[in-house]
Amino acid sequence: MNKKLKVSFVILSALLIFLLLYKTFYTEGSNEDADVAKEVSTETNDTSIGTMLGLTDNTAVSHFNETFHLENGGSFKPTIDLYNKDIKNNKFRLLFILDYKSADVIYNSKTKSYIDLELKPNETKKLNITVPDLPDGIHDFIIFSIRRPDDLLTKDKYFPPGHFNLFKRATLVVGNSQSTEKVNYTQVNTINNNADISPILTKKPTGDISKALTLIHKETLSEPLWLNFSNKKANKYSVLVFENNKKLAYKNFLEANEDGVVSLPLNLNSTNKQNIFAAVIENPYSIRENLNKSNNNIDWFINTANRVTSR
Image (cartoon, rainbow, N blue to C red; front, side):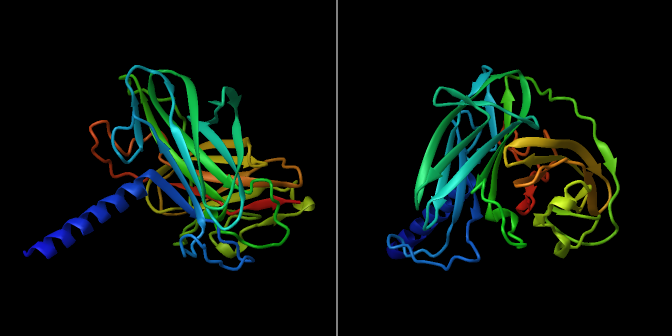
């Protein structure tokens, strides 16, 4: 290999490593509004718009930032990176979940159940938070980023999950204990079809994404809703539903042993003029990245529903 080829190879290798690391730090979603034309950034000539969410701390066992080992116990003090890769200002709400319950964090010396902030075009915000007083054991920690959280839908229009919602999931291993909160799972049946759908709210059990609700009118609020999502192999789930994009209104742990669509009845007693946000978390309390940096081949994703507004 001649000198020029060697140099090119080294540069290409370095670029690939950088891209791999970059992807592990952040999860990314699209902000692109159907009613907003694409515009070209004068700084980057990049027409893509979206949001990126990252979580870092020196207790991470590797650059993947999926498992954090707090050997001496106590508090978790990570940095959150939120990037508004957009041509306009955007408001965001960060929700915090610890062990599938709403969690308070300390931010700017104040206790917060959620954090609201606004970012300018192409602005990155770093937030230093503290999750205090963690007992020894294994904990699931999730951050949801919701863009334009208080904007209600005015049209019966489907926006895909990544349009408004983004998440970052992490396992916190505190001390040397491997204990977790005890969970009782409810066995659920599936609809026998091959639909592969993101979570949707509907009036009846279905695997048909065209039946997804976007606007729920006042007369429908008193009727049970159904949350439908795909199960492709034996999986355990936690289901969380938030009202007004901040209040945890429903929680359940489920186990589905057959392929198909899980249809779960929801009785939310929702009021009108608010957004409803649903999330389905795969395999609660499972560790994807071990302390020795090896990787477990498990489903670990979080699927969220499209934006639904009750009016």
